[in-house]
Length: 137
Image (cartoon, rainbow, N blue to C red; front, side, top):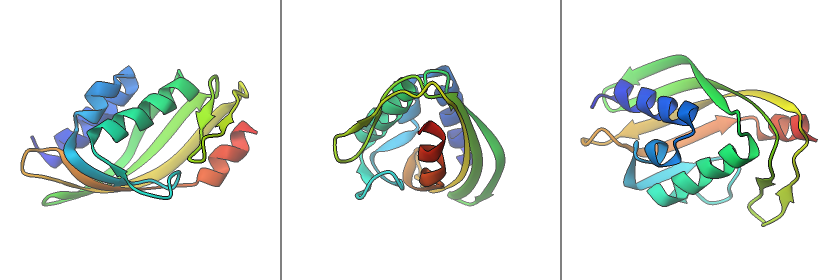
């Protein structure tokens, strides 16, 4: 699988709300840096739990790819996400932000590296978490 295939396969799984399929695009020992968490997510199970939380908070979540740059085994993907805040958002300290029933739209960039199996081994996500939280409050 190519780098492009891995990114598109993950986006397709996200739009189907297939948490297992989404997580399967990541290597078993993947490391994902996300602004929502103080520590990186480590492993496919943490990636799956993270996206399941997003599906619960935004049951109509949809993602789109604005642009994708690839250089050998690395990529930079600019994305946009939309949805409606219909479920709780868990926070790293265990507090949940209750549903606001408000629509959200936010963009970001994901920079990653795909291993020789075509799985995402490392990823850094950059998005405006403060803007997202402001939209749901």
